[in-house]
Length: 220
Image (cartoon, rainbow, N blue to C red; front, side):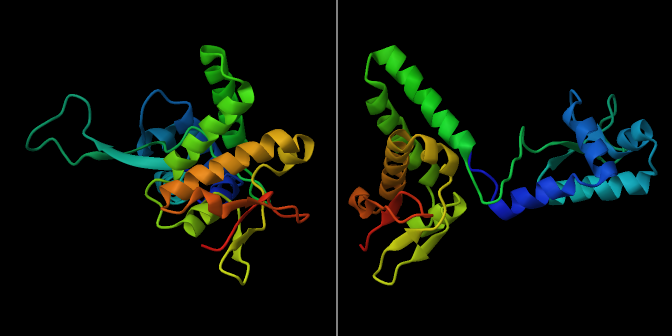
């Protein structure tokens, strides 16, 4: 599953700065099933209109999703309209400034170790394979490579020659401490994404400009 766009993740985290909104989110996130407005309002001692307003704002900000259920034991004509119910839209929402994606790095590294343990393949080779496949998976359906890179936080910018400079590294802190491992992982991930977008993987080249990603996109 693709992450929410960076702006929406920032809005979601900021939304929880409101005390009532945070309490409502925590209530619904800890519930065994979907929660209705009336139940949420009574539990937290809020007016129904106040609970409804904040619940719908949490939906707007991508933290909650809505579903509709009829009251238990009621069905058929005359049973009333289905009630609006709320449930968490995602298990976790995180945002950082600048945009980073350490969750993806962790997934790739763990998957590589699992593959290496199961097959005996060297970890470095497993990391390249799993990263390449993940890039293909996440970029499937993207309208183009630049659009995919923007969504993943790379901040692509035209270089004036038909290529792209990547102004942000989603794995910056890890790349600083472990450049050989992380840059190889990143390069394979981007190669997989390029092929999924119909681009030759050879467009992914190394880059040594300080402050930019370790990869760049060469002209087609």
